[in-house]
Length: 133
Image 1: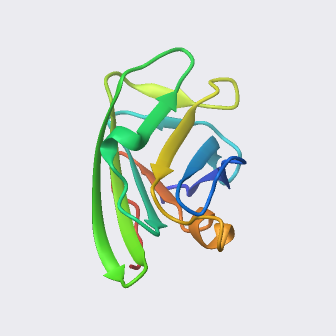
Image 2: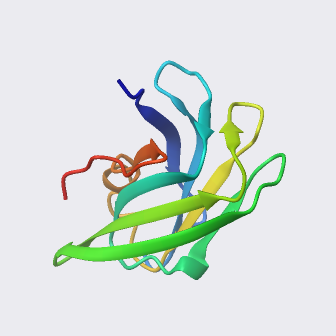
Image 3: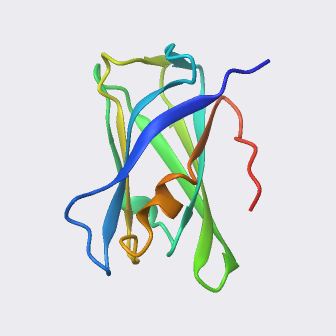
């Protein structure tokens, strides 16, 4: 059975009703163990607007190049389902010491109900996370 991957997801403190940043930190298995990415990290979440691939950036230590492919699908009048395939150029283990962070800039109102957006994140290593849209 695959272990569930969780993270600390928050809204950037400088968010406004027009733009905000969803910040993903402390990616780990639910039991606290490290996550090893052999090929890619699948990420899915909800957003009030399209997420442009140029509005994604990351931080890793040690540095590893990540190629991000992001797709959006509108699921109702105010919500998009976002999927990100983050392909790591080399095998990479994320643990508390790597300082790995993912940042998604959103040109929409995240401050109206921040927990709705931050709690929608799901992750999977080397596969797509199972989600209900």
